Amino acid sequence: MTQQDASHPGQDHPLPEDTMTDLVSDGPVQAHGPLARLAYALGGIGLLGATAADTLAVAGRHTGIHLLGSIELVQAMVVILASSAMLIVTIVHGHASVHMLTERLRGVTAARLARFAALLSALVFLVFAAGSAWIGAELWNGHEQTELLHIPLRWLRLLWTVFALLIAWRFLRFAFGADRPEQA
Amino acid sequence: MMAPEMIGLCGILILLAMLAAGVPIGNSLALVGLGGLAVMISPEAALIKAGVVSFEVIMKYELGVLPLFLLMAHLCFAAGASRDFFDVAAKFVGHRRGGLALASIGGCAGFGSISGSSLATVATISSVALPEMRKAGYHPGFASGALAAGGTLGSLIPPSGALIVFGIIAEQSIGKLFAAAVVPGISQAIFYMIAILILCAFVPSLGPATARVPWGERLRSLRKVIDIFALVMFVIGGLMIGWFTPTEAASVGVTAAFVLLIARRRFSRAAVVDALQSTLRTTGMIYVVIIGALLFATFVSVTGITDALSSLVSDLDASPLTAIIVMALLLLLLGSFLDGVALMLLTTPIFLPIAEQLGYSPIWFGIFLVRTMEIGFVHPPLGLNIYVIQGIAKDLSLGTIFRGVIPFLVADFIHLGFLIGFPALTLWLPSVVGG
Image (cartoon, rainbow over all chains, first blue to last red; front, side, top):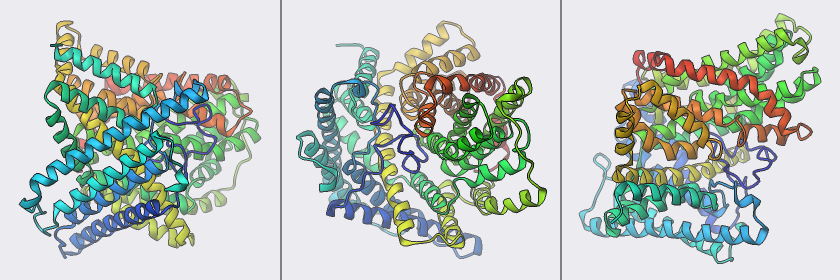
């Protein structure tokens, strides 16, 4: 079962938080801190940018005006929106997890287990950041870029590395008991 | 040194332990995948794989389809599309025995074509249809059972989030998967309707008829859904006939949903911001899970577990049909404690190569997997849809709802049997359309 309040998953009317995936997050926790605002703003730009690029490409193709490079633009937008989205879901504690056992544990034990889970999660994102940084460093002077629009991939890789570090930091804050969603 | 298959088995056991301990699904999959690769190849290889896979996933154009379809759904919700499908269907068939239950199946199918999710569908349609059915004197178990089962249509009817995730993990065409889901989705709804008609024919008190609505009013009510229906037909139809790729279809869908929002006079900054924020929260959750699943799949393929299982199936000399039935039983068993998408991510890397070796198409397997996963939404002990309904109607006991679902579960098993027995039901449409 993928939510915190497993005994009554419908209580908070999962819609619209769980559309498309049936993975249920902890609910629409609002985060108002500067990091969250930045992530929402970047993610929103990514979503609207990807929509605009592909819609214009389709409209262009069907009216005989071919707009080249829309796929590359969408790719860049998706990097921005996906990185931001993963940070947001971490800030709002919205990752999908199985609560069949933890919901049956005593409060203290469940909290300890949650902190342990956050520690392991931080480790995962630290590995992502380290792996991306390694590859980024290897390819930095290669000036990797897209074919048509020459969008530099090294900056996108760097962006992801920074976001992976931020996500790891958020998990670590939670693991060591310093995290509250509204502090984001 | 332990045999690779044993390392794989240990990895799966550690994964189950981590999931039980509440470690997020995506992170558990990634940790086991990376740990396994570190043990089997080298820590450096695991580190590089982490960097490569994580960036490749977030750079993947095809995966952009998911957040964009999500945004389309949220904009449609903001446009007030949630209860209209049920209302319209109720006006057309509500006066028949079990008519409101039939309407709830129609409402679920219609809403599922926007939401792509079982839980969202059951939560939305139940909050509208359940009070109406109870007011009309429907048996509570029957009414809630129909809704719980109908809600599962959201997972299969395109654009389905589960199929998009499967398409990414299994590297299959999302357009073909959507096309393949059309006939199974429609036939599933028909099976539920037949179950309702049979039940109400034998026990009329389960779903009494309500007052007949004049034809003028019925036709006028169509105006409430015609624009959303046109949007869905345009997006999914355009995708199937090759006007646009899945990601383009989703982008065009978002643009059309914006137009809908304006046309319905619901456009506001708050509505758009809310839709964007909700989309981003769900998107983040999915991306982590997909990165984790791909790392886990790499580890599983390195261990050779799937080859060992395939050899086992060959050695047993079991027919492909028997092997698929065993897989379905295993999926149903695992579905008792793992939810749908987690089940899919865990089993696809193991079962898909076996199914392919047995001669089954990966497109067919995707539909089979999602259909089996759907049954997990209504069968005990997990049955998430049941809990969603109980959250809406707290006076109904879980036992009442589970009992109400039983006839629909029978319909589910017969339908699954049809899909297994007649793969053409799934594979015909993708063979004749583009995408």
